[in-house]
Length: 275
Image (cartoon, rainbow, N blue to C red; front, side):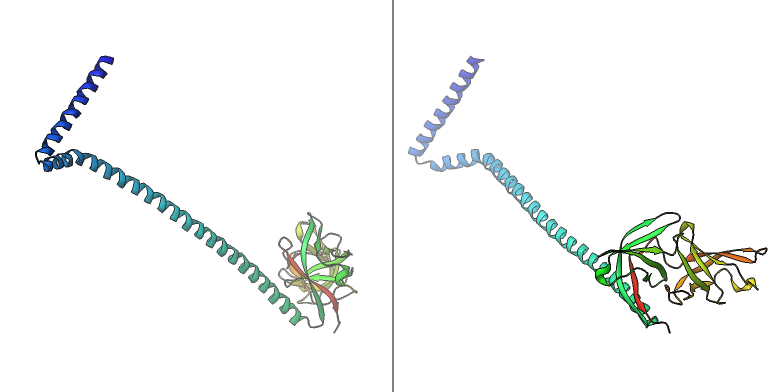
């Protein structure tokens, strides 16, 4: 193997020397054009390879340039998308605020003798038979125990405990809640109590002369009897009636008009005038 390598080296060296001598002789004889043509013939494949490699390098460089441009465009699109998402979120908040303001103003227009304070629900405690809410308003905001809480849909309950910046509301669906109520259609007066599964029940047990005074679908409102709830606040709708003819009593199940599973903001009646 070493011999072969040495022999190959000698052959290559001999060829180079011969070409050199041949080139010199031709040059002395004034035949330099032959050298030029020979060089062009010999170098043509090498130039082709070189040009091919150069084109590949340029293409490779262009590829990375395009990648950088795509990355920059992608980053710009991502930032634009974030801006659009923020605008969409802000728009949703504004729509919600606008809807609440319309509801608030509508309630005020229908209850011109009421003074209201806006409040946000920041906590709740609920189960099958109890329901209380915590609001972000307290004594620092002029809130007092006994004040009535409502929404545009109807009665929520009354404030039972007040802190400096928060207060707790006993909802009408809580079993410990009792409210004077009446059937709006017939003016049948009774007591509304909290019941299980987020419902209420309307009780009437004396002087019932006709069972036509109450029916499924009747609206139940506050009666204004007592010193807590003003007259006419919507409570809910009768969905079922149980009549005990022996004791001549009625127990009606009432579905609240307020959705207590989805309540975010409320109105506190800070004062009202009885007309």
